[in-house]
Image (cartoon, rainbow, N blue to C red; front, top):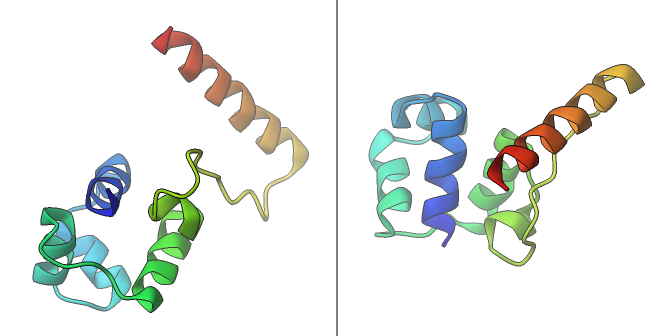
Length: 94
């Protein structure tokens, strides 16, 4: 489950495995192993992945069904715009 989430979050940002590896300070092979389910990130790496992707560790681990977005540093107008975009995206899936 975590393998699919890492890959989906990485691809949603348009990052190659090498880019995520660079941001995490690991090898591309390490990222590939996570995404293929050959290995599991350490607890410290899970925390770093959560920070990198701005999601909770519970989301990465499949304990929380919803992703959260870190909106710190954004003003109220920007947060409202993000909320409207999320609503619009949900509506297109119905």
